[in-house]
Length: 220
Length: 315
Image 1 (cartoon, rainbow over the protein chains, first blue to last red):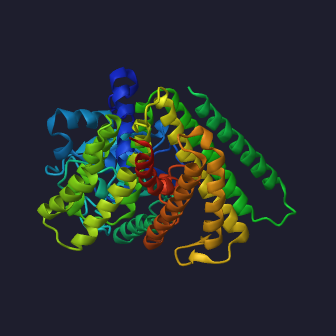
Image 2 (cartoon, chains in turn green, yellow):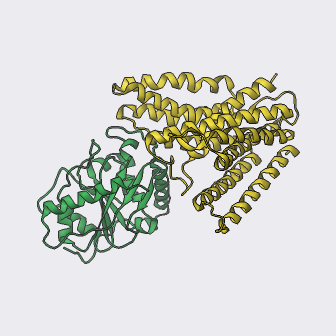
Image 3 (cartoon, rainbow over the protein chains, first blue to last red):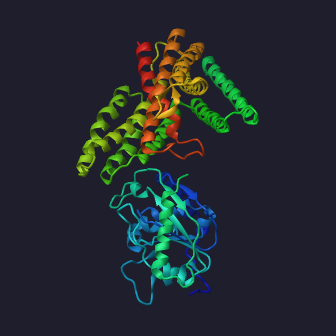
């Protein structure tokens, strides 16, 4: 489904304060994660994309978003959990700054599926950052993907799906901790993929998961 | 600024200019049968040396504080490279947090306050005891000794040892009205000698090297390079004595000491890298390895150089 007029989120350019916080947030995020972005058979681009990554830490959304070059970042919205990013004014302010698309994980209504909400919000301008594992994994291996990515591409098959592997971030801010340890992390962007015509759900999800896993072993 | 410091800076610029010219000339010679990879690596090293010299010179021009802060950031970055390469467990998280955000900055604040009595024991005593206790409280006993030893080693090598380089700026050398600039000269002499010793050992090892010290760890470090390089470094150091508070014989001895410690540092850090199966520590600057690859020799030479200088020169 494609809506003609996407609901535009607050534009950061119009508010100088947000612009400052945005740049500050990117700096702080880069400092703490020491992240270096590697583009492997893929170039940063402003075409509509869905970046899908392994989920290891609360910082994931911010870090992947910060790793994108600014023109791409301005058009990219990370999907994040409403129950986490709604708590307290600091978190909700930050979520506004990095332009998060907050999804309620608890109350999923029949007529208001998160997929429809995402598609309505991005219109034909914005890209998304999603974490198809659903919840943060505690072990080192990547869990099975939830089916959201499949339904997303079924409705918008032309969206480029870009696999992303986040390395080491679970050590920067592990589950249940609130103080980060500034280790060096790495973000690998892989070659875009698409949902094939008539590809079964399970096969597609496994293929997507394998694409993220492949980025794990990439050496410089 | 005293003439000695300007003289040293002049020497550095001359050496670097010569090295740059030589590197450019070598990269244009294709018929000599030289290893192009080695030439590229050499040129990259020379460029890195220019950058670090400019940073240091900039820091000198302002105040000792700026130099200390600069070294503090280098320590911080080296430590994160070290810990990133070390497998840690969830139970180490809080101990690591304090390592990065309490002990590392505090060490450099104490150095800048010239609190020798405090900064010489902060890490070997307080951090040394705090880390295992904090990890024990977290309650994960798996490979306990190994884990705490890794954090302690990282903190000692990357922070404690390195902090003795800027500490040279506060060393109270006899009664000298120009003490401040003599100290800047001392630090500059130290850094230059580490770089020269590294370069000499590398070049001589490359040309005359036959017997590797530890072939399984680093095949390019040879006995010939080590002995020849150290001997030459002692001569170079002696010829620079006029810029230091040492007499010529002391300058030669200190240079020899620096050269030996630099070799020890390089070999030790190679062993750690080899164990972890990586070539370089980080990817801060493309093709330059990590910060830790650049400072390994300084880390090992600094505390020993500081200590011996203190014994020799302070009343």
